[in-house]
Length: 634
Image 1 (spheres, helix red, strand yellow):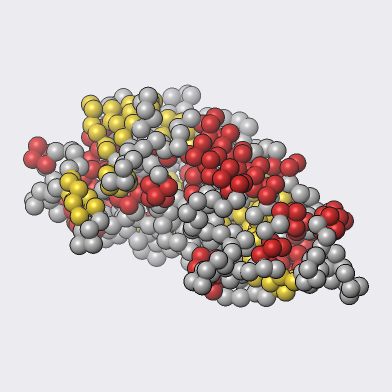
Image 2 (cartoon, rainbow, N blue to C red):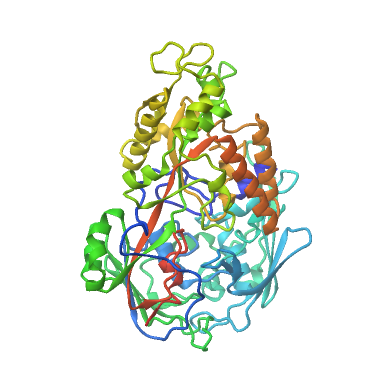
């Protein structure tokens, strides 16, 4: 079951700064944090309490991008320069609500999940059309998966995600089945919380892509046919059944950047009307887009959207100040430049809320038990394995000082691995966490007899060992370096010797995932709206479990409780059960303190005052680009 789950969550999103190219798993990040917060005068809170306003057609919106798209191919795209463009040309079956982040209908008007919770059946809205006027049916979705995305000759990560294992460990492919013109079903080999996440796809137009690769429905059918064989090492593998007349590899070069953009067909809010390399991508409304507002006006409202290629952040700032663009995702250093020019230049700065990533100090509890084992030994292992000691260390995290002095006030205290915007965040996390309290930390250390025995100002354990620990983070990341320096000072003030040494990021990661020869590390992970992405971190078998990765079975009682709660939260499709399971994990993580969180950076956006319906979230996929069909000129 564990092996299946790790396969299941692989590779749903890609980040250019990620340690692991791959997916819907947590990833170690080596990035400076953006900064911004409503503590500063002139910054507005993002109010998402209202529904989308009814706007009016017309207007233009210009936003800058760091680079050109690498293609116009949504199947092979693995970089945001392409997905930012193609996201305007595609809608999914269902999507998360921009405000609540709960699932809601999109191209599908409804869906049902079978009694065994392994099959989801989608019913499409009636009258859907592609931007060329061709009917969009369930065949488009099934063709997209079975004849394009799942094929071994096609680049991209989808096939790896949906090639899974059944309960007996045999490889199987997730089944996409055509029922009728408005219905399709998706069947998984086992129950998983990812049944919606992994089945809600955006289609490509079968009437264009089929002929492009030589596929013919009457000859080749819609089904993905395969057998199970063995490779040269004796491992069971999926063997595709292919028609020799179909050139699946042709998908990889289809809709490249040399394509006449008039040939690109959309089921999203926009079509591409112009592409000038190194300059711009221009969008205009899809005349057959399915969404209408309460007044019956077809969306999108904007008559033109322009992505300007501006490959330098400082230049992007200057283009915004000059009025060449209407939106700017701010850095902390931009606040002083922009805050007093809002009225003059006609824009507002909004604080979207805490970013979704995490920054924390983690405690190594990985023992050396054999000659070939990696890890740490007593006395350091003894100290770090003591829960009261870790709780004392957690009481030395001065979040407010970090926010004020390190992040210049642009941040929020963090207490959980789940973003506060997520529906799975436990609202009791702050109250349950250990607050900054050096005296409480000292009292906890006294209670376990970690005291200054010789009067030299440093605490020793009951065996007389001076308590001294190495703390590492990646050099060059000023926020993490400052976090370590502040923690070092607080620990030394109560008699704990911290030897802080910044180092190379890649070497740090090697320690985390391979050699395990570290004691304390300050590091960060990407985070996600759905904590299912943390399957490689929070269960005891996870490769990024850090305190002791890749356990065959949980060593500690609380880790068994986490594993059980993880199964409760993720081997189900019941949302209430999922939330209950994640609450248990958050409670345990706070109480047991395998690591302690610091703060979330705040996210700032500047946008022209003339635009309505700007309700962005500080989460990937829910920023301004995800709501352009609703944006309008007031």
